Image (cartoon, rainbow, N blue to C red; front, side):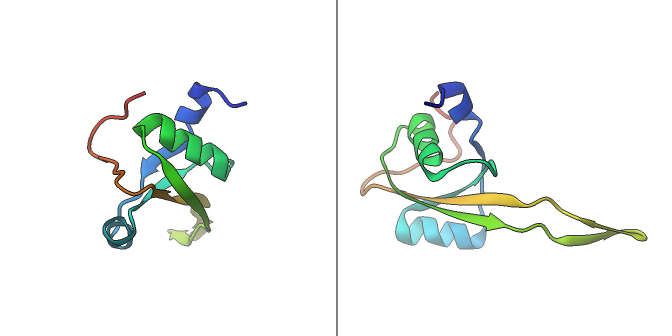
Length: 101
């Protein structure tokens, strides 16, 4: 079993864009940047621990890094993972407040 300290490190940041704000309003889903090694059960446990809400589902998207030019050198940004967390009816997360744990 994974400890509380490790669960606190699963979620990196909320991912707020125009698309995710529409999903928040219409489907009661929240998007987070998560560690690339995180699994769906770990993400569920981390959100329930940090925000004291009931999670009804988790969808994960692996985002590939983009190719960038740095002067003459061609580089690549890092791959990352995004999680869409669906909450039970009547539950909300205040992203501006500090986490409880």
